[in-house]
Structures are given as structure tokens and as C-alpha cells.
Image 1 (cartoon, rainbow, N blue to C red):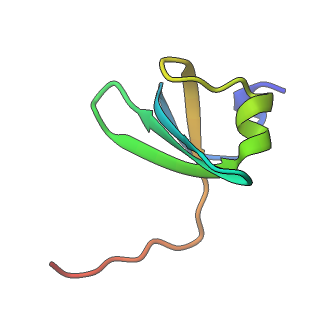
Image 2: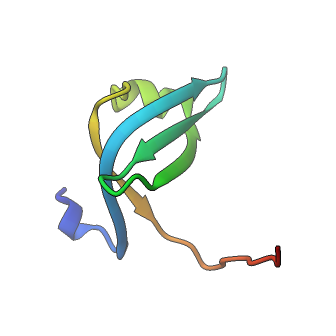
Length: 72
């Protein structure tokens, strides 16, 4: 499957900056070329299957039905 075959419009290319690994789920920080950090919470099993490591080139695919906003 290619990335163009996925029905996700928000795609951010970047590099894995940090992985905080837990026993079941892990946080993966992806830094885009502009410095934006996108954080994903995925299973630790997926981290291992994707062989994610800091510095690895990835694409963060974002699909959401809701965005919440709060005032400052």
C-alpha cells in the first residue's frame, strides 16, 4: 500500500524525535521540517513492528473528527 492510497488528507513528513515507551502504549514525537511537533500514541507493539527509532523518516497521518479549542 502506498501513502497516496490512504484516505487521510493531513500528512506531515518528519523525523522521529523521541519515543516514550510504555508496556502497552508509547508516545512518538515527530518533528516536521518547520519544527512542528506531532505526537502520536500508538501501541508499543506497533513501535517495534515499524522499527521506529529517533531520526527515522516517517509520515504522521492525522485523521480527526473533532478539534477542541480553549481560550487562553
